[in-house]
Amino acid sequence: MFIAQLPLSLGMSERRFAFVDFTYKGKTGRLSIYEAGRTHSLSQAVAHAATKRELVAKRRQPHWTPPSIFRPPEVLTEVEVTEAEAELKALQRHALEVVDPEN
Image (cartoon, rainbow, N blue to C red; front, side):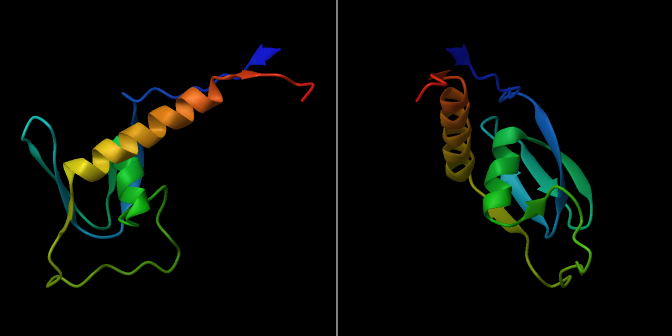
């Protein structure tokens, strides 16, 4: 038996390219504004939630075009980020489970 290792720490940040403008108001009440066309450093939970909503990606897509300046920013909610954090924790627990190579 061996234990699978996962180099994931929920406190780490990830760099993501923003497809659209979006905002996120964290637990502290601080409003973060992410501008389309730029790469931002996001917490893993925010990055996961934003990726699920297709607001960001790891890198700029080849045929990406900026959104209209008249498009209002998307809003990423605390509920979405909390759910994403729970998903990441579940994935981490699953990855750290004892694995029996004979099964």
